[in-house]
Image (cartoon, rainbow, N blue to C red; front, side, top):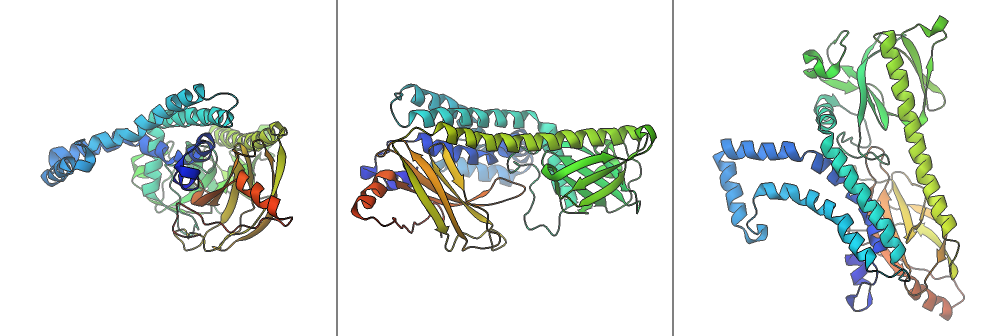
Length: 409
């Protein structure tokens, strides 16, 4: 919104729907925040009852004019209250926006996104057991050697909130190595206990397993690239199965029983199927949007050449890609790994619906594996400005654009 106001004449904003469509998907960190709300409230109450220094500090904060006299606990509720209001507010704006206005269709899409976000937050609050187990995994599993840190109780990259679907002991058939496997909705994590566990039936009811610590045995295996195959034993009465991934890799597992083997196979197959279906759905959604956008007053061809001095992530590098959108139309460049100065050189085409109102939004993100992609800045160009320049020259319009909302880029 600040970028739109800065780049609008007289600071008057004519459209907000396209901005909501672009930014609502990045509100998803609040899903984890709200799911931890009850635990956080209980912690504040405990500290207030048992720690006089904590109680005094919170009292002083309440007296600060910036807090408007509200207690610390009320700030835990604010995000939840705001998120539940967004669908109502957007719906009202949509109702009072005429169908002829260029923002009408964007507001309709923004309303759907706001309702989906609200549903995800409510689901996250309900799934407290899942949240508690993910927090336990965070504190007991050491994941060394990953380029990107995993926050287990958070959003996946594209499947919504991370969910723990199954956990249990598996043995490698060849070496008889004992592993504790965690199946999430986006990947399978194989860990090695730092002390022998034995044949436990439920990780989260076993005191021995809950008090043990674990280290990552192998890089996480993403479920959109896996297949499960049972062994060729007679009538399939065997407690082993093969996990195939990355086209050429496979692991031969033995489970603790035939029933447990059947459960592992079923849950991995269902999770892999769901992952692939959601990927396909997201791809089809963009294809549908492009097909619906055929009617217009013209077409815009752009080439995204490069990024310069982009914001670095925690490891000093980034895996950047550029996302260019005009309303619901969207194109993305390929990801360039481990650089702050990517060269994309990718062309894109957009249908122009309104030459005076359409705005080209350009955002850059760091491609992540285990969480939503990190924001590296955005800017925008009004189509009317591009049109004016093209009338003055027959050459392509070349722009070098500063990215806003970040320190560099």
